[in-house]
Image (cartoon, rainbow, N blue to C red; front, side):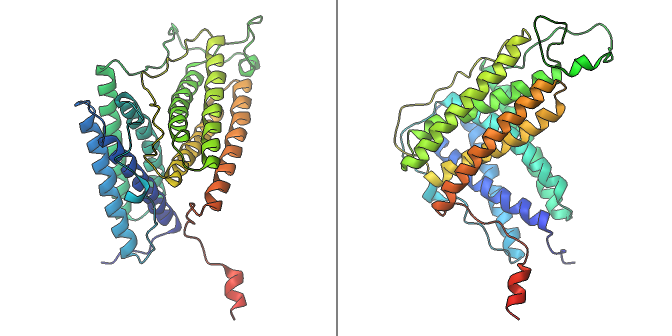
Length: 334
């Protein structure tokens, strides 16, 4: 029995996943070229194997449906002989954080597809990346590297909101409330995300070949640091300790391990993820000042993403997704 033709959502899921997995495969190949920690190497090998397997399976599905396979990223976008740019600890942190991005992405893809073979593919991909995230968490915990979310005292009983003041901002000179656990969790996660983004931008900016790309990536590190400080201030105002930065390093090597195209795509992926995270955090935060902060910062990130897209278009690095038929063009051919 033949499969039904792919829907637009199914093509989009496969197309996007192919680009992301080819990028991931290149990054992990570079990590494997220098990581020496015997505990971390198997973790990298495992996710590299998953990425390679996903790339092959998606390619086969696209070819079988007569859909052009994206260019994505290949051995031309990675230099495994480049000097070490990141510490072994950073690589483990990277896997942990990017696994979270993968969990969200595969969850969305799995929910978007209807065909059973694709549903099974993305369900398995989601399970594999979830298992890997748990594995990375356990390893970080064993090594004393896992930054746990802030602890708060628990209440003795269930409480209900008694006043609309609950939705107003924090004021130390009034009875307005501190942060609740939902707001804390989103602030913490966004700090973690931007720590990764800041360290990647620092490493990428010092090795990019194009001055325009270097400037863009350096600007990204400044935006990341700015947002970390804003979120940290919100935590401190409620007497919550700001998560400590990772015990990870970016080396001083200026030898590029990746193409400028890959580095720009990678940062674009993180930017898109952060915009989604901000939208979710804004919707979940019940204090108006926090929601407004997320909205303001999201606009800044969106502007940064737009500027990055312009650079990628100018350099012919941005692949065009499959699209619907141009009806006006079809009419003009009659």
